[in-house]
Amino acid sequence: MFPNRRSAGISIATVVFLLIFAGFAIDQNNVSRLKRYKLEANASLQDGLDAMDTRFGYTKTLVGLLDDKGLAVPFTPLLDLYAREKAPSLLSGLYISLDKELDLLQKKVFTHKQYPLYAAYFEKIYEAEQEMALHLDKYNDKAHYYNVQIGGFLATLAAKRLGMQPLELFSVAPAIKGRP
Picture 1 (cartoon, rainbow, N blue to C red):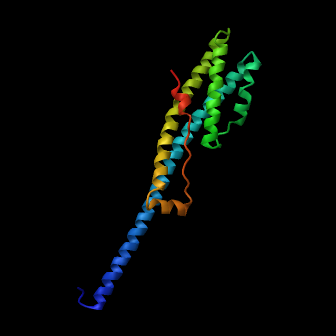
Picture 2 (cartoon, helix red, strand yellow):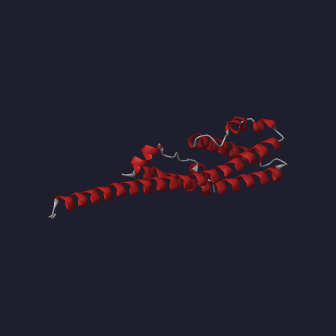
Picture 3 (cartoon, rainbow, N blue to C red):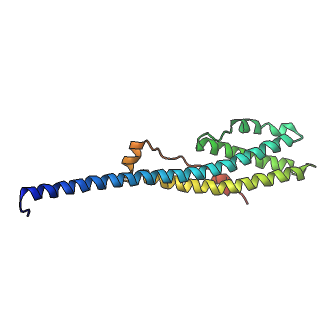
C-alpha cells in the first residue's frame, strides 16, 4: 500500500492532523453558533422586557390616578415585586396576576365618571401588551431553538465546556391569547 515507512508515517500524520483540525473547526463553529443563538434570544428578551416595563409603568400611573384607593390595593404588591432582572417564570407569574387584576379593575371602573381618562391608559397598556407579545414569542422561539441546539451531539460538548445553560421560557401566552 505504501512504498516505504516514511510515506506511511507522513500519510498517517497528515490524516491525524486533518482530523484534529476538523475537530477544532467543528468545535469553534459550534461555539460561535451557540453564542449567536443566545445573543439573538437575549436581544428579543430585552425588547420584550422593555415592553413589559412600559406595561407595568402605565399600570402604576393608572393605579395612581384612581379616586378610590381601595381599588389600588391589589396592585401594590404586584408593582412592588416587579423587576426586569427576575427569572422569566417569576415575571410570567407576576404578569398573569397583573393581567387578572387589570381585567377586574376595568370592569369595576367602567361606569365611573372618569372612565374616559382611565380608558386611555387601558389602551396604552393593551398596546404595550401587543408589542410585548411579539417580542416574547420571538424570544421563546429563539430560546427553544437554542435549548435544542445545546443538546445536540457535538454542540453539547461546547455548551458544557462554556457553561451554557438552557434558557427559561416565558409562559404569558395564556393571558394574551384570552383576549378578544
